[in-house]
Image (cartoon, rainbow, N blue to C red; front, side):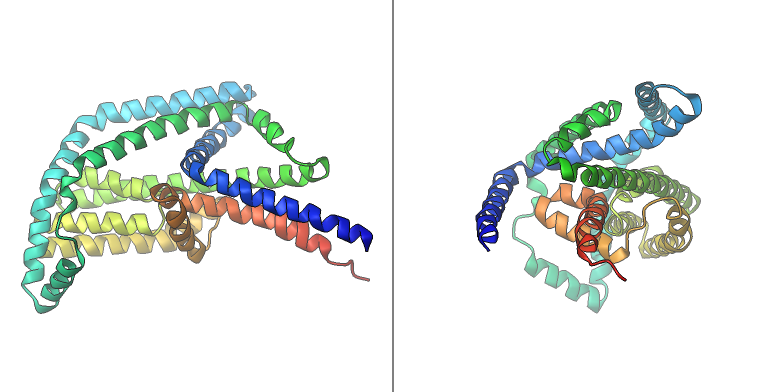
Length: 340
């Protein structure tokens, strides 16, 4: 009994210390998102460099550097071949959006249901349109670009020697917990690499399919819309919906019939992706239930803003693996008494 009374204040102190650390760390949540983005870059580099190192027997650091140089060369080659037409199409896309909005508004005003939708949108919107906040948008874009460069550099340094940082992190924990935490971190890293590879395949296939399909349909700005669809695919469900809405909106500049064709085209792509592509990818990548994917975007988006929306799904992948390894397998199942 005395031993139990002595342990109660110790647990209270630990709980209060944990809460204080969480409160102090909350203002640094943006830094935490940049660090997690660096972990995603590390997972991608290691997922590509580890097989190269095993097959060629090159040192791990050399393989990471070669993979990074190959990715940079691939990006430079793509920009050299597609940069000029892509930049032109993106500029045309920006100029075409006002015309597309006007076409969509005219079509909605032509029927009773559309007129009611427009009336509701006018009542719920503010009197001042957000077009005047271009300075804030430019500042946000500049900050996002700087964060992307920072997380890319951090990811490269982490990929060169991940064991160094893992050993330093493990030293923060009691020795008896270090094997369990090391095993959980290894499983989380493996799961993140699998998710990243599967997502990269999905992004590339969806982007190429959208570009080729819109080009075959005779739609303008097919290359730009394909690039946007591929990038938006990084955010499951919501990204695909946003890309489809943008393409349909652009198609309204050609008329309601073209918009309907584009909407049906994206619907077919989503069905093929969900029933054909994803089952193949999930054989060797991480499977995240659809409800958990949607919940991840909503929860982490609420907590961390735009960065939480972008990184919500990989955050949920890591959280599920750590919960299973540390809490379910490491705590709950170890508490169960052994059977006869």
